[in-house]
Image 1 (cartoon, rainbow, N blue to C red):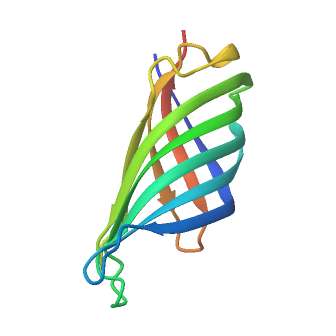
Image 2: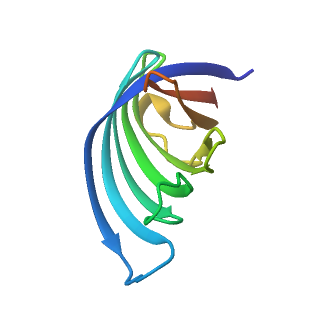
Image 3: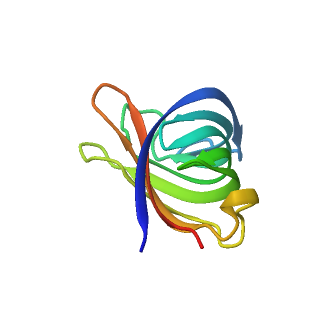
Length: 137
């Protein structure tokens, strides 16, 4: 039987650099992102994101990202690390869509054998949450 947790997180660090030589059209960027999780997931995350902004010259919100994130801390009181791979897209005028998974076999310590899927949501007040549906042996 799987479990579900929802934990708030805040971005505590963001270092972004462009890549590619686009003169017009979509811009591509890479970012190292640090996070702090609170709640049933308590700990820190370190993610590397590859991002695309569809039309940086306009105020359009059309964008997307893919990420690999190493999370270290405790999940429902069990300590260890695991890796999330996730993605997201946003289209102007529509809510963002995100999804991802725990990388199979990436759990360590008391989180060895962790599997699951995740989503990220951003509330109107800017609060970020991670919903994780998971199983542990």
